[in-house]
Amino acid sequence: DTVYLNGDYVAKEQAKISVLDRGFLFADGVYEVIPVYRSKPFRADQHLARLFDSLAQINLLSPYTKTQWLQIIEQVIQCNLSEHGEHQSIYLQVTRGIDSKRQHAITVPLAATVLVMASKLDSAQGTLNGIKATLLEDIRWHHCNIKSIALLANTLLVNQAQAKGFDEAILHRQQELTEGASSNVFLVKQGKIFTPPKSQYILGGITRDLIIELCSDAGLEVYQQSIHIEELSAADEIWICSSTREISPIVAIDDKIIGSGDVGPVTKRIAASLQAFKS
Ligand code: PDD
Image 1 (tube, rainbow, N blue to C red):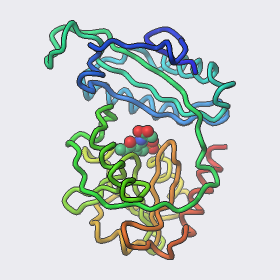
Image 2: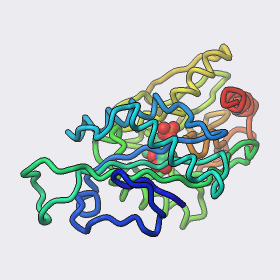
Image 3: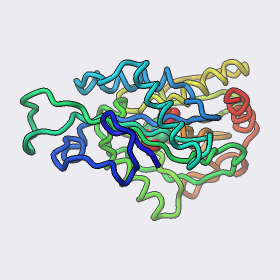
């Protein structure tokens, strides 16, 4: 594994950061996960636009231009082709950098710490097996639209779900559906598509945006509107989506079977459109 760390391409084992990095001490940073198909970053423009947005929201200047980011990403992909193959997942994170001591307040501008690494992407392609989710209260903060590296709530929630034998946690805030612990959620009801609107309570997924386009192109009506959790059990089909999981059908939520309990026709159709779009 070769990773990019602050200007250098080094073996993952050699990549070290300071204990005074604000990312380590305060989770003071943001990240992106970009899927790579046939050696090409997928929807890179959209991911970088969201990165710039996340950085702006935490008052951090991007250390690089879009062109520079793309060059680094390409280089990391190339360095990892023999190890991970041509389908990869790029993880990049920017933290506020190394301070002189642990202190909450930022007293002087610091040089950002940048890490870009790759892993093998086990493509969800064809693996349209239904998964089970559990409904949990969304215990996160009010800025979920920032792709923050502070993921303690998300990791606690998914671990709570998995400890109970579920694959993903689906979250609600005062009975309103938000998203998965690391995914967005879609419902199908009588041939119409529903997903919660973008807000400070969800991370606006790049996959979510693409799926909305694909649904519209397929002539389906898409409603981005608030969804009460009671509507989950009444849905014909549900799926979650993300850059790494693409479309994952949800066939049960807690003890409630969704629709027929099998992967539904609309899910299959949109998953097929997504595969076609990727190639
Ligand atoms: N997570 N919502 C949350 C909370 C997420 O963490 C993610 C993705 C998404 C989907 O976004 P996108 O379609 O842009 O991947 C929604 C990434 C994959 C992760 O943390 O690994």
